[in-house]
Length: 480
Image (cartoon, rainbow, N blue to C red; front, side, top):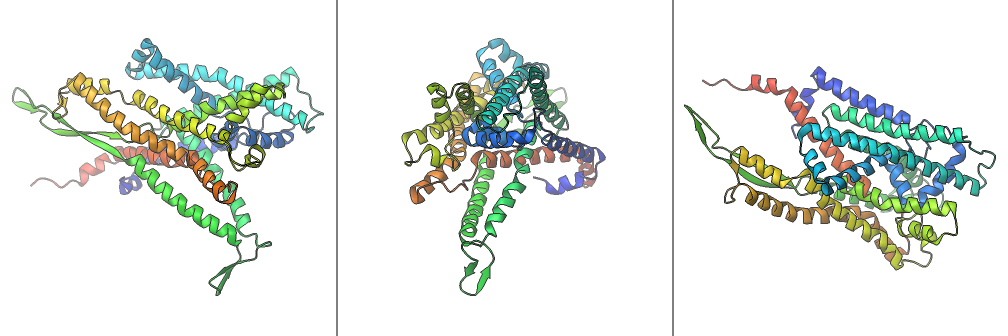
C-alpha cells in the first residue's frame, strides 16, 4: 500500500468529493436504521424481536448485516439479504444456462443486464421476507400477550410490507451509488458499516461488566496495585483481545496470500518498431472469492430456520417446522442451556458441519465465476502472452485450472476454519467449564470487517495512484 500517496491524494478535489459522497451515503444509511416500520407501536415488538434473535440464526445474521435494523424494527429490517439471495440464484443459473453464461462474458453490457435481473429477483424476495418477518413478529407478540390490543388491517400490512421492501431497495441503490465512486464495493461497504456500527454498544456492555466489582472486588496485581475492575472479566477480555489480534494477523496474511505466475510476451516487429519481449505477472490469490462464500453460506443455510419458524408460528405442533428450526439454528451461548440442557449431543454438530461444507463449496463455486481460466488463456494468446513451458490455448487454461484448484483447496479450508471459530471456541469452553462463555470470536463478522477493509484500502490506493499520476511524472528526474 502507498500510504504516502493516499494522504497526498486528499489534496485532490475529485478524490475528496468521492470520499465525502460515500460518507454521506453511509450516514443516510445509518439514519434509515432508526426509522421504525409503520406497524402499530414499534416498541411493542422489541421483546418479540429479542426472542427471535435467540431462536433464529437467520435473524441474527440479518441483524448483523442490517446494522441492528432488526433489533430496532426499522424499515431496513430485511437489509441486503434479498439482494444476496438473488445474486446466489443468478450465479447458479449462469452456470446452468449456457445463454446466461455467454451473456456474463459479454463485457459491460452483459454484466449490466445480469445486475438488472438480480435486482428484479431481489424485489419479490424482499416482499416475501417482509411478510414472513412481520407475520412471525406479530404472532410472537400475540402469543406473549404483548400487543393484544393491536390488530393490523390489510392497509397496515400493505403499508408495512411496502416500507420494508422500499428500505431493501434503497439499500441496493445506496450500495450502487457507493460502487460508482470507484472506492470499493458498495454492498460490502454497507455490510462493513453495519458491523462496525454495533461496536459502541458491545464495548459499552463490556465496559459495564468490566467495572462491575460489587461481587468480586477489585483486581489485585501482585499485591501492590489494585485496579477498580472485575478480575474474572479482566482476564477473559485480555485473552479475548490477544486472540483477536492473532486472528486478525492471520486473516490479513491469508487475504493477501497469492501465487505469482510469470507471463512472457513474444517480441513482435512492425516496420522499424518492435513490441513485446517483456515479462509480466499474473497474481492468483489464495482466497480469490474473499468473504462472499461466508455470506452466501450463512444466508443459504439460515433460510431453513426461517421457514421452520414460520411453520411453527402458524402451527406450534408441527414437527417438521420444529425440526427445521432446531437443526438449522446455530448453537451459541444464548440457546445452549435451553437447547442442550444435558450437554453436547450429536445435534450440536449438524449446523457447524453443514456450514463448513457450504463455505468450502461456495468458495470453489464463486472462484470459478470470477476467475475464468479459459477466458484468461484466450486473452493471453490474443496478446501474444504465454507461460514458460506451457503451450498457449487450452493447455494454458488447464494449467491455470490446476493451479487455481490447488489454491482453492487450501483457501476454502482456511475460510471454512475461520467461519468455524465461534463453534470451535464454544466447544473448547464447553469441554472445560461445561458451557460456552459467550465471548466467542465471530468468524463471520471479523472476516467481513478485515476483508472489506483491505479491499477498500486497495481500491483507495488505486484511485490515489490515478489522481496523483501527474505528480509522479513531474517528480521524475530528467534524463541527462
